Amino acid sequence: NAGVMQNPRHLVRRRGQEARLRCSPMKGHSHVYWYRQLPEEGLKFMVYLQKENIIDESGMPKERFSAEFPKEGPSILRIQQVVRGDSAAYFCASSQEQGTQHFGDGTRLSIL
Amino acid sequence: SQQGEEDPQALSIQEGENATMNCSYKTSINNLQWYRQNSGRGLVHLILIRSNEREKHSGRLRVTLDTSKKSSSLLITASRAADTASYFCATDAGGNTPLVFGKGTRLSVIA
Image 1: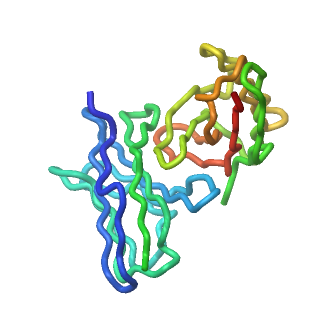
Image 2 (image 1 turned 180 degrees about the vertical axis):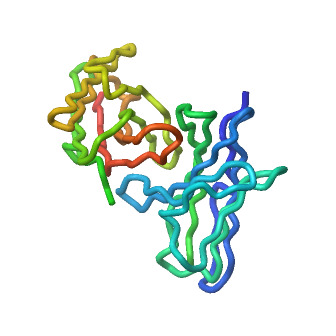
């Protein structure tokens, strides 16, 4: 039973480039959450999606950030025109209906 | 806004001792969960306690919840070097609402 799979594990981008982070939920899970973690901090909620729908994006920055969870394929967190402040670990979690959230190992994004 | 706040921020103990970490939160919750995070890794779910529960055990873990004080504690008994990690509490408001995390307690268990 594979857990939540995130890739890449590490991503390096230069300022102004785009970053695409992928998350494949656990089998049978239709709810996906994205969180961001700064060094020495807890996780901060960004967005909650179900298949083809954004349910709650109250934690997403208004510009440059977008997320999708298509009918087929992984969920994607996209950051356009990255800046140094986007450097962080980005975690995806998935759950069944009203179930415990299970986390992936994260993508560590570094901006040069 | 940040809901949970753990204390202490960092804790260093000898192997075999017990470790106690506390978490406080601000608003009403449905569940409170504790997670562990090893350096450079994702979060591992440890235990969930519902708002109508006061205490829960799982192996060497004991969690208490006091909704009147809006606080929870995580006790790890007979600690091991492998328990070295950061521990986070997270609350939710029910359903599939997002988790709200504290800043965590960094536990070091010295062999």
